[in-house]
Amino acid sequence: MLGVDQLRVKFARSRTSIGAKAVVTGAGSGIGREFALELARRGGEVICSDIDPQRAKETVALIGEATARPAHAFFCDVSSRSDVEALAEFARETFDGPPTLVINNAGVGIGGQVVGNIGLDDWNWALGINLWGVVHGCELFAPMLRESGGGIINVASAAGFAAAPAMGPYNVSKAGVMSLSETLAAELSGSDVDVTVLCPTFVKTNVARDGRITADGHSIADRLMTLTGISPARVAAQTLDANDLGKLYVLPQFDANVVWHLKRHFPAQYAWGLGLLGRLLPTD
Image (cartoon, rainbow, N blue to C red; front, side, top):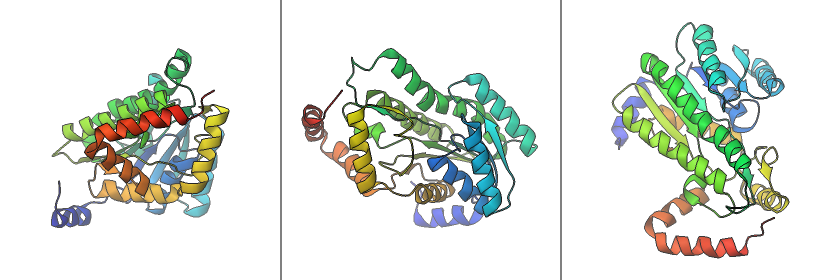
């Protein structure tokens, strides 16, 4: 772990988020859009990729209105290897070289069914976007970043370690993103590339509304979003600052930190509590 003095030296020497040549997936809304806007405010040039081209163009327009910085919309289904290959090539052409920051943000929500009732189609859909999307981004962009130096930010979730019931595909996908990020950080240790994994609880985005979540699951998610959800702009800025400092984990909320420590210090009691929660939660 870097000491305070080392962090200050690193921060003073190089802030990846300032003037970045950045690629953001899922930039059409939510945290991805706020990453793109914040990077533009910091003087960067941003490729805003999304599976919804109109949303990507809206983000580019917002950047133009707010900062007049260059930004580019690009269609990309991150579950498709060929789409991410095309995104990587577009980035190299646009920036006349490799990007300096890649944010693997695209993701979908899924929940409300227990394992055995989910269906393999939903498993494939969720893992294809939430996990394979990040795998594609890391596998294809990591070699480019080794050339340029910079940062990789992978958006996971507190679900990746919380393992709440009735969220199997989401939990598995986000746990995979956490493990991939930890592995990549170890592999890039000592290089000029910093890896950060974002693990929030509820952020005020449309991920639940656009996902495959049961009616009961929607009701619970909406209540929790209202009670505990935080601004995606705040999350984006905090995560960029963390990557600038070389921090691996970002847990932006108090409840995420509580769950993180409970599971690690009291694993048996935590598992018992999850079992109780599983018996109380409604499932369709």
